[in-house]
Length: 243
View (tube, one colour):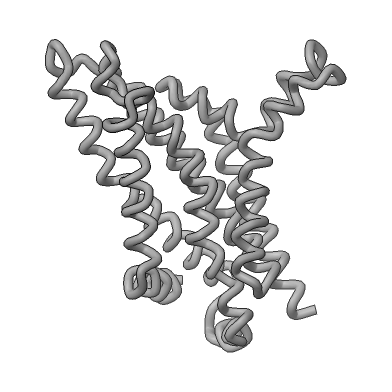
């Protein structure tokens, strides 16, 4: 697994993929936090970087599928997937190696945003007037959200050899898992009856809970089980090629 992990990381950073992913995320989040007047921190009288955690899922909706679309689709297109499976590696090791490499890249993109937190921390009056617990919870929630999007992207990439198709379908599935259940819960057939249950199937409810700084085991279990489910689908997708 380690060899696949470092191979994928090297591939990300030996091309423009890794650098573009990080730069695009930082530019977009920076514009919304500091430049655009409607969302700029400088126009608020409250020390918070909540805007980052509102815009980040929207950026990840397109950014992460762009990162993961090559994971298996490119291997299939270049006919190197069969060669990869002949090496002394299990399918699970291949999947986890690619998965953790993509997650690491997302982590690199998030790391520089700590500058935003420290900027607001020292700009606050008095200094440190910011909900640090809420920020930590938001980062945890954002990382979990990115982990689910990555698992979805890896799975879709294993289903096709066309990278553009992998990108479009991944973005759509990520949208469905994140927002669609909120819209469904508002339909008359569910509203007032089982709307809370329907909403609990989506990421947004659990992401908002953790973003408040309240780490609930039910939310953590949701994220871990959802990630495991999509990685299992990837395993099934690879395994069916042997059938």
